[in-house]
Amino acid sequence: MVSYYYSETVSEPENTGGETRRRYGAEMKYAVLFEKTETGYSAHVPDLPGCVAAGATFEETASLMRKAIQMHLAGMQEDGEPIPAPRTIAEYIIAA
Image (cartoon, rainbow, N blue to C red):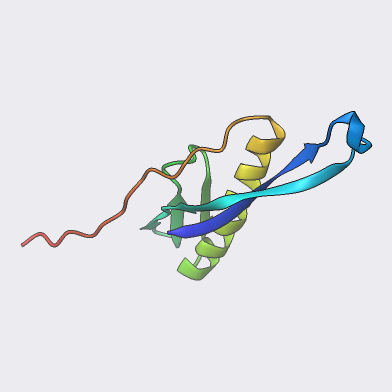
């Protein structure tokens, strides 16, 4: 799971001088699924369709995934789309 705080730019009404400021929202913790590939690793966030990353090592992929989530959420905010609440739960189950 990766935690993120999201923020949005808010323009205040004219009676406050039309001031623009950043408003910070709640922490969002998204599940990230990593898969080993022939050339390294790939990752995606089930709750953010299209948010993916790939790298040569697990560490590189995790770093790229953090940046991808930040960019994905920023793009959604810029487009006026609602930020989806994390819903995916990841668990390992031992199959015997």
